[in-house]
Length: 231
Image (cartoon, rainbow, N blue to C red; front, top):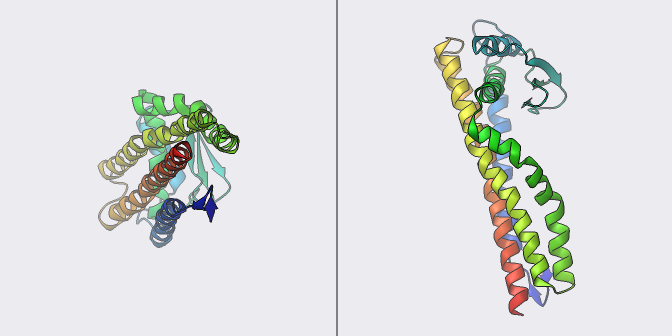
């Protein structure tokens, strides 16, 4: 692939980032598949666990809904809805209980006013701007040879990096809360708790991989724009 006047070696950074993200994604799918076959000995479902955790935290105004997809689980603070995917909703596997507890961790963060969660929510508009506008601005700047415009695009892209960086403590904390509750309330013990822990750690690594890939992309853009400026 050529860029400008020569071979664009920086594409290697993109490929490295894609490879790392791919490995992390494959790892979480394999880990979930493994522990989705391990049923908890009490036979309780992910919905039961989610309801128990929410009520124990004094949260009664959060609905639990089913959402299509595989591992599309999430908590919506604006709607106060905890959505569990087809692979999790109503399931009794150790993996499903771990994921449900993790999403409850986000609901508890919301109730407590957890600062990183507030910061992440506030940064969503900027992250969206960076995601949608940065690339057109960079490309136009490069095409017309106006470096300041391309640099503006890079600045906008840093919003995406910042959002992903803020996301890490939010996700890690939610998993830590989930595992602590599952242990303290004797919902999962021994091998079951260890399995849930592996599932949540694998999921957390996907966020780390995504951040690393985005940083590599940012470095690539900086190199390309600065190289054009020198030319």
